Amino acid sequence: MKIVFVVNNKNNRLVKVLPGLEQYCHQTSLGSVEFLSTKRKKHAIELARKATENGCDYLIAVGGDGTLHEIINGMMHSNIPASKYPIIGLLPHGSANDFARTAGVTNSIEILFELIQTKTTQKIDLGKIILHQTRETRYFINIAGVGLGPEVALNMERSSSILGQGFNYFRHIIKGFLSYVKKEVSCTSSTWHWKGKLLQMAVANGRYFGDAICIAPDAKFNDGQFRVAIFGNLSIWDYLKNLGNLKKGVKINHPEVSYHDAKKVLLESNESCGIEADGEYVGLIPATIGILPRAISFLLPPTS
Image (cartoon, rainbow, N blue to C red; front, side, top):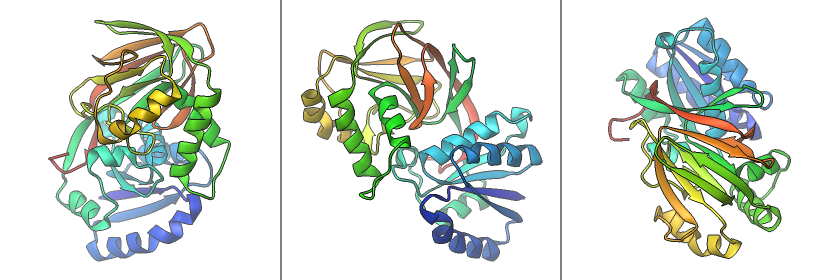
């Protein structure tokens, strides 16, 4: 058995996490264990692709949603058949950990190794984004967003905050509301169509995004379809009034808010409109987003 940990070394996380991981690996004697540390943004994509092509049984992200997003893309862009993909796992040590919140994954090393020892996995869906202008393909495990979300993601990439990632995200949301000009966006599936001024759209495989905002309370990782939440021409006051309900997972009853199911959506706009995936800025629409049912095996307890 070969286990590869890809550790996001932001904020010197390696020093904080690695000693406990190494000690537990030595105690359990599960086989070959390798620790890879990121040195720059998107480095985990490269590390995961090489680890997949070199052969491993388990590929574990140690970090947050962004780290998991990168190792998923590294594996999916590798030159091996899907039948040879490693099992993916997560030890959540990120800022938001929204995927872990939906999946019920904790940062317990003991629980992670128990899942490995008992080979406890689930097949879960992935999202696939094709950007029409560049023909680039990106995969996501949690949520893809259009509208305000990509603006926030792009601004956060360019900034830092000593007050913590959660406060930084909220600050950029408010800043985005005050400066963001809503774009006219069209979203088309096989059974419905929406067009209008857009504040935020979430094409959701998971339930949470934006640091514990439950944008898609009905979303499931393994049912073969997205939940699409559309927040149209909302004001900042409408958003703030409903923020408490969003945190609780209560659907918003508002004429500019709608919820839909879809297996594939086409996103279009005549304006420059960004798209993000798992909190990472991807590029500009037009784009097609499709579901890949049961695409990967993930270390998860049966009740997740």
